[in-house]
Image (cartoon, rainbow, N blue to C red; front, side, top):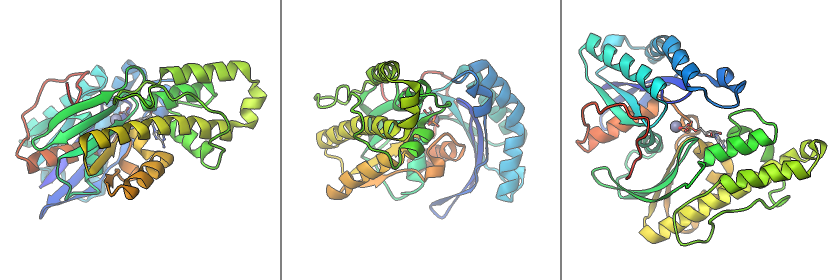
Length: 337
Ligand code: KG4
Ligand code: ZN
């Protein structure tokens, strides 16, 4: 079966072709158009601008996906697109395009949860993995620990009270003079830096809950930039980025360890843009190896938003006979209530 996956919830227009054959899924193509440049001047994503860009690019990115996969449009058997969570305008562009194409080709189109997509990206690297398992979703809009049980039964163990982990990277990066989105840049600049150069706060670390809070970290970075000269910040940027990354990773890992102990799960699935972070992979990897926990990260190229993860989410649902028909487009749609 050939799937077309369409992702348009935020600032990437992404389409992918996946082949599901003999119980194995292969990504045949996964092109995307990133709107980073359009939004960088504003320091964040502008929903109206994003919707217009999606409208302009979605058709050509779909053609690109089909061409790169070496198939024709008529070889596609089904479409999966993102229904939320995300920005309303961008979601509507993807949904309208998917529904139009489905009608034209006479094939079904299914609306998928973006967060389920991020977790499905990790499943692509571990296709034999069956629930129950613990999941950690860390993206620009979400930070949440969720227990997934068979039948897509989700139980939240805690989420962020304020900013998401990716948002913390982006906002702190902005204060340090880095361009949006700053997560990958902070990871790169801090790679060989001194992680103990400055101790940024770790809110809620050590409390008996799966809740996160990152807004205090943002304030701490603001104070840090106010009390140190721009020259000092520039000269020590590598060490500051390393220390900042360490604080975020430390919070994420300690809460995940708390949830692993609480649920006694032996598998952990991580998804979302921040799952591309090398330090998070390293520290969680060390813990899971030591405690004999199966750890599933997406391929780095599938950590941030892409079309393959949306088709993969649909395929996971097919496997469990739980592919529902198109739900309404919802800008706010958590995995677990
Ligand atoms: O999942 P995603 O592509 O979009 C949302 O669904 O939000 O995540 C984007 C977020 C951004 O905040 C970005 O800074 C962060 O993921 N990110 C990273 C890295 N790559 C992307 N954060 C830390 N380290 C990275 N290597
Ligand atoms: Zn995402």
